[in-house]
Image (cartoon, rainbow, N blue to C red; front, top):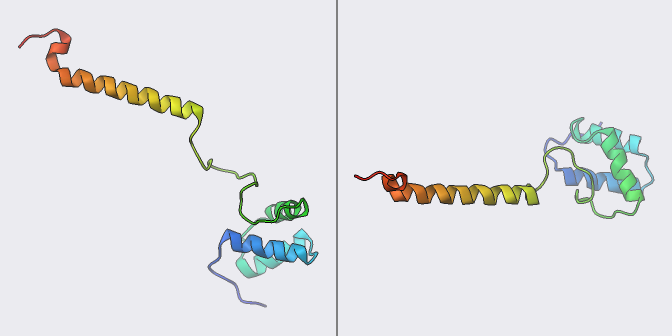
Length: 110
């Protein structure tokens, strides 16, 4: 049995998938090879099959640009979030002006 690699990157694993796919190896066999060398946390069988399908469809790169990712979005910059931030900034600025004016803003005289 080959040695197990302790350190690896997701792109490295996808490179191996692409290489083995190009040699006409089926996804289940590719997954077995991946698990043997990188361990069972490297990639699920379903994910290996998804990458093989992507390569079959013509994808040539191994970066995760077009794959649907689960979990947190890569960016939180949305129109809704930008409006919320602007509203909070306006509110903070208004409160800052009120605090600078001091007690006179409430009609109190010292």
